[in-house]
Each structure stands twice: as structure tokens, then as C-alpha cells.
Image 1 (cartoon, rainbow, N blue to C red):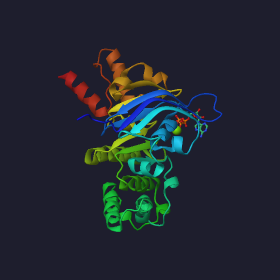
Image 2 (cartoon, helix red, strand yellow; image 1 turned 45 degrees about the horizontal axis):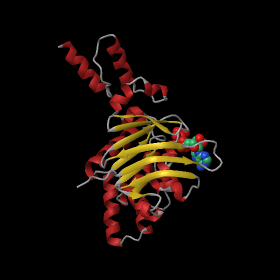
Image 3 (cartoon, rainbow, N blue to C red; image 1 turned 90 degrees about the vertical axis):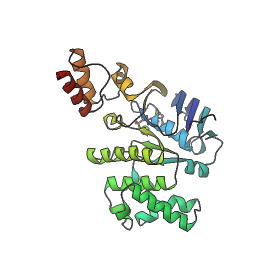
Image 4 (cartoon, rainbow, N blue to C red; image 1 turned 180 degrees about the vertical axis):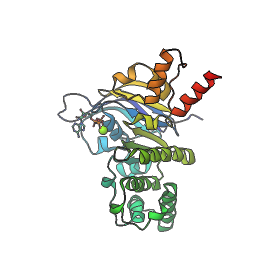
Length: 283
Ligand SMILES: Nc1ncnc2c1ncn2[C@@H]1O[C@H](COP(=O)(O)OP(=O)(O)OP(=O)(O)O)[C@@H](O)[C@H]1O
Ligand SMILES: [Mg+2]
């Protein structure tokens, strides 16, 4: 059996109307099911535009010059209508306020399911499951607008998961969150991948938070893919910083120690890993 990737982007180029240059240019990306991919790069390099070509906002809602192909589970995004796409690709906006509509958390999480006409009984089950997965069952009857940012983010994500998408794309999901809550969200993403096999493509500036759970780091610059590899390989190379990717401080420290012959190569991504390496060298 030939395995189909959950996401295939081939030769994708997109230019917004009137824009002087392409926002995404000759872009290729292939993501096997179950991976967590982080997309990084300087502001304006085309990350959000690329995500829009995956959830279908481009070309279905935004016009422009479009060439190349984006496929989700083998089906062309261009050839699939938005209603079908909404069930295939879960999408979390940067600001959860844009995704919260109803008077109770429970109704809000059910919103997408109601839209696609899921029978009441099944809806009940899916909403309960999503609330449980996100650890917010106790908030079911609360009003979403009176929750904290981190809680709102979870409600929005529960609404996305209730649709049971195989692919979820997140555009800077931690930007409104404090470090602790952001860390919790990342742990949640890792847990969902493990429990449900969901694939995630995440745009994130706080690389240090995500590299520990990511399988792959893709760096963009001026619409093009310039680096791709395991977070370890990409971050230990010299180029990542020149594209504005913030090297985690533990990786920087380890590079310095390696330079002085006090540690070996291979980018370490967490303080625990570095401590272990230093401990072993003392033996
Ligand atoms: N709706 C739009 N109409 C016209 N041009 C746009 C539109 N949205 C984005 N652009 C342009 O496309 C390019 C890529 O923008 P995009 O928002 O994809 O970048 P980004 O990598 O997500 O940046 P950031 O990190 O700031 O969110 C930029 O030059 C931007 O000005
Ligand atoms: Mg963006």
C-alpha cells in the first residue's frame, strides 16, 4: 500500500492582488501523518499565507495568482469546497476571541458540528470528548467571554478537535499566553498527537517551547523554504539565526561549551539534556 502524506505542497506560488512580489514562492513540503512540524521565519516571510493555502482560505476566499498544488490527505485544496475542508483541516486563529461565538463553552465547542449537521447524540459525545481532552470539562457551562486567555485558547482548540480533523494548523497559538500556559498548550499538542495521531503544523516564534516536541523545523524567508530538518539539525547549524530564528538559550550555551571542548556536538534542546551531558563527562 502506498502511504499518502497528510499534507503535500508542491511548487506552490501565491501572490496577493496588486502585491509587488509573491508571498509564497516555489514552495514544497511533505508531511507524513502524525508529525508535528514547526514553521518559523521573520515577520512577513509568508507563514500565515502558507497556512491559508492549507485551510483553503487561499484560493477560496482570497483571490490572487495561484500556481502549484496543495493536497490534504491526497485531495486538492483548490478542488475541495470550504465546508469539506473545515472537516479535514482544523485551524486555530492567533486570537481565540475571533473563534468564540456562543454563550456557553459547551455550545461554543459544538458550533462547528452544528454547522455541518452532526446528529445530536453524536454531537454530545464529540463535545464531551473534546472538553475532556483539553481538561476543561468543568468549564462546560461557563460563558466563554469571562474566561482567561489560556482557557479561551483551549475552548477554541476543543471546537477544532470536536470536528476530528486529521490535520490541525496553528498560527502563533502561544502569542497571547504567559510562559506557563504556553508550555501547557505545547504539552497538550504533544499529548493529542500521541492520543489521536493528529498532525500539527504550527507557526511559532517561541521556538524553544516547541522544539522539544517537534519532528521537523521548517524555516521560511521571503516566501521560500530555506531550511528544513530535525529541530536539532536546523538549530545547531549556523544559518538559522541569520533567518531570525531564535536559538534556544540552552542550545547557545551548549554551542559555547562545545567550542571550548567542554561538550560534544549535537544541539541540545532542554536544560535537562545539557545537565545529563555535563554529568556524564564528569564521570
Ligand atoms: N491580505 C493580504 N493582502 C495583501 N498582502 C498580504 C495580505 N496578507 C499578507 N500579505 C503580504 O504577504 C506577505 C507575507 O505575509 P504573511 O502574513 O504571510 O507573513 P507572516 O510570515 O505570517 O508574518 P508574521 O510573522 O508577521 O505573521 C507580506 O509581504 C504581507 O505584507
Ligand atoms: Mg503571520
